[in-house]
Length: 327
Ligand code: SF4
Image (cartoon, rainbow, N blue to C red; front, side, top):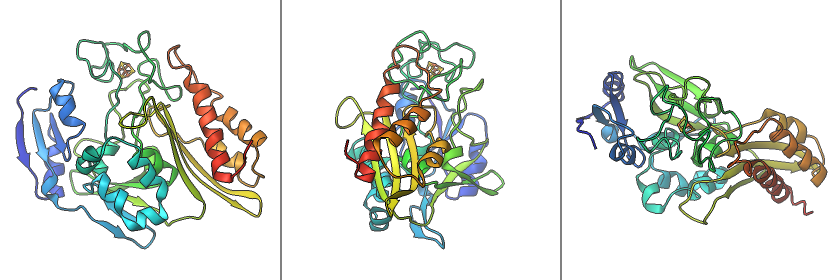
């Protein structure tokens, strides 16, 4: 690990002001950042500890819930309001990491976690995300966990998390504070970026901007599921995942909010799926058609080709479970 300065911030204003300075990173739980610093993937000149901001609340709002960015993953997963009204979020969080990590990991940090591409975490390897212009080791290398949608010639990494996939299905909003204390809100669905020709940028945060909260919309009716496919049953990142909020009324699908994890550089939402499904009678033929649409432009690079049939099957299985259609 490289030496770094350490500073505390008692207020959001001070934290964002300090974070606007080059080479400065905010630290909350540190469950991803510290690992990356040990590997010298991240080499901040200064860390700003935001743990003393002291806003870990999960509050009712006029339209839903506001979850402070410093709330731990565990606090979110055990909150009774979230367990009752947003179970997809609880299921996604509990499918991720371990209890110890969830106790430390913050909601803001979880949104900002970085890819687990092995070329990104090995500083001896080329990686455009870590070192722009150095090349992409995964494109012609080992790419089993990599993306099949939303990639570019410069990067095929996935966003690896679970929590944000559920938040995307719920259409949650991210509250962001900037260096002049101005606030803005963006949908979780637009928070992470596809790589294009700037793969070093994972999300839309500008210099000095900090995530301060996530807003959940008003609860909706329907079954909420999170189905995660991974190589072992705990403490593993997804090969693919599906977050689903599906409602069936009078024999027809009334809601089909779907988001997908670990198949793209961001939680993946395809608006065409809800358009196809809503208003239709649930059934295998319909689900097969929706799954075809999901992967119609998906491309693997060899090692990860298996993800195309895998996410297709996972979507169909999730829809069958949600609508109680059994083939
Ligand atoms: Fe780096 Fe992205 Fe290529 Fe992985 S896929 S080596 S993160 S540029």
